[in-house]
Length: 120
Image (cartoon, rainbow, N blue to C red; front, side, top):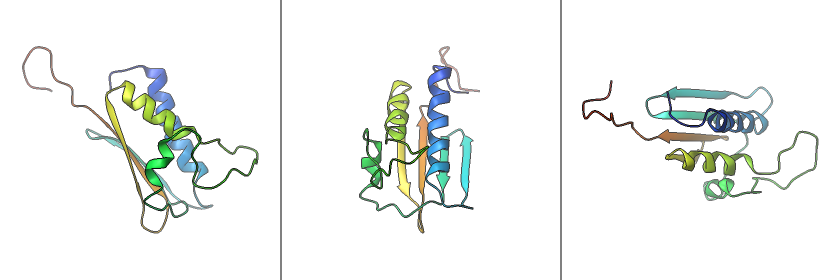
């Protein structure tokens, strides 16, 4: 469970999964994991140079130039993810996968119980 706006959190997940599917190879793999550390979405898409990864979180940034084909995004998905994460005191990080693809992690802060006891 993550406290926050359910509509925005749903958009965060949708954007991550849609990007992983859209920017994958035919027959590639998308892996989604959740746990106490947060959410991780990974794919087996094209190679992403490590120096480009941080730029992908800027609005209208893409790995490749836009081709203006149906269903093609405009480069807002990851910047929206980053904005929603910030609004929920979460952090977003990404790493290029060896052999191609990207792994994006969203880490939500640890909740502190209001009564001073330990979290259950």
